[in-house]
Length: 274
Image (tube, rainbow, N blue to C red; front, side, top):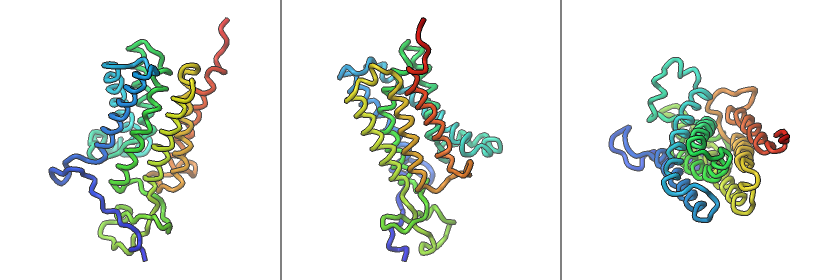
């Protein structure tokens, strides 16, 4: 009966040079995400909506790359594999084994933007508002790569579009014994990528929020991401132990909502100048 469902058999390598070495779709997703951010930042500058252009964009993207990679990698072990980092600290350096956290990546990017803003003597809120409009591009390609890798699959289901992920069962398990699951990676690609991108672009181009209320758009992004992430978590098989009865992705997203609301309400919370 399960053979009516599509069986995941995609190769995680675009080009394979050896068994474990080659060009992976996951790595390509990061390249496309950063390239998309560069293209958008140049477009913003040409339209007069961004003070950053030319070499400054390259400098900004360099900071973001380090923020994403270091924050995402460290966040994965601290938030999802905290026991492993103490048992095998070198696992942090084995990037070819995978393991990135979007929540950790957000923290890493925030710290990177703080350093960038201080170096270039610009407002952190101004630059963060620009970056959040580009973030959904990387999130979209990252989730597509998750699907290609057959990782972070969804909960079991019998919907007609369900997928059989051989990775979800023990090795050598017969296909007819592997239950179909939600392709939650594609749900998240649509929610975190397409929906968030449309929302951020609409707010950026159709309002004056970045000029009149610096930091607010960044807050709106954090709240919106947390909401769609929590929605996607409803269909995703938890990849680590639960916290207070909910998945870790949902639990950590609560803190993003708090941070986002803080940015949105920041003008009202600031004390009036004497």
